[in-house]
Length: 225
Image (cartoon, rainbow, N blue to C red):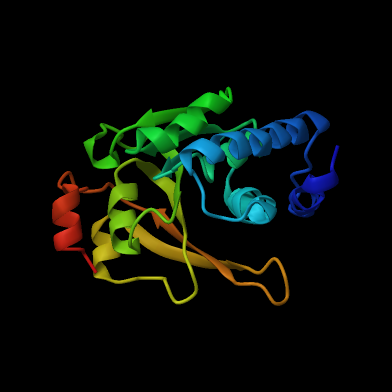
């Protein structure tokens, strides 16, 4: 079954998360369904020959830092990345994926992964408070806005693991005001000549003040950093 998914299977095994044949079948179905949907809805501009690396493997890069049985929130999931690969690769996880774009989110809904719950809406309008062990997001927003949106949903002791690029790590007193501390910065390079993927790990160490997150227009006009 591996074939086009060999690199994904190899990566997951290398981080202690080997995939079963059933999981590989789910990933194959995801790729086939994405091809069909993308022809009509333009869900991704990534070339198809890069989907395994850029959509599947890169979504799974945070697996080593997600504890067993964690509840995970994916902000701005689009068609379902990284939420779909995380939910397929780790069936012990309870994954919630939110996006305000119903067209994009429809693909994640269509996939009907049992441990994935897609929500159409904006994170600042949700009532989540200290419900998640991990909050993540890929290309969701500038980092200051992403952290502001991530803080309230996290449990104390939980972590925000945003997908960022090199030189896109922020720290300062405003991070502490949200209830965070910058615990560590993870860097992953899949290929020797490939880009470095950066995952700053912000741990929630205290309750987030009730004024956060602010409304989107306010966050955009007056970011904390």
